[in-house]
Length: 268
Image: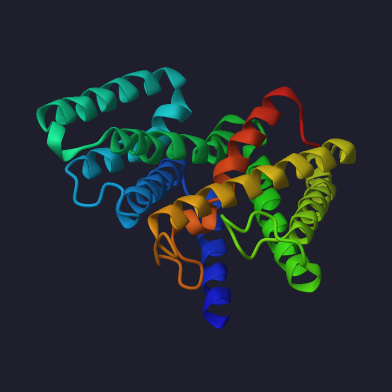
């Protein structure tokens, strides 16, 4: 537990430094490295593309996704085109060394997951109040995770989806929704004071509900991949927490959700 707490504190300090103190290019570079590492965990540590010459191509593509999707979505087109060209060129030249499933896994690990995770970067750099609203996907995901754990330990009796995640319970899921709603409403109170506006607690509560559900889906989705590939954690870069995907699995689904919501309405 001590290692887990220390690791979490270090992670929070790094997050604050990268998001609030570092220049934009450092923030983008750090996030690009995060996406590349996530792709490596998903494709190498699971064994899906371990040892494949496609692996470095996938990691480079993942590294480029945050910048390509942040500055102008048009840049995603040439990135996707070149990546597709290289993947299928290699597959055509080495048909015995790759399966159709591995081609699909390459796209999921190096394009889809980094693009969804990059929703955090797009909120931060493209929104007028990005340095405030960037907290939304993290609060929804991690407040939900925290209270789900507490409710699960105290009241958990009914398994949620035991075939995917044996420890998760229906009671924990209810606690997760409550945690996300509470976290976002508290966020609204403090952010409202900072921005000088009246918080819309109804919108914040609704965002907390859908954000919690999205985060749970992300957690279960990445847990399913771990179960199917026979691994316990995606990595050990964060002692006590696992790898990047172990810590950010729920954020992968909450970040693009809040990016979409912020296009249509303010969360405050």
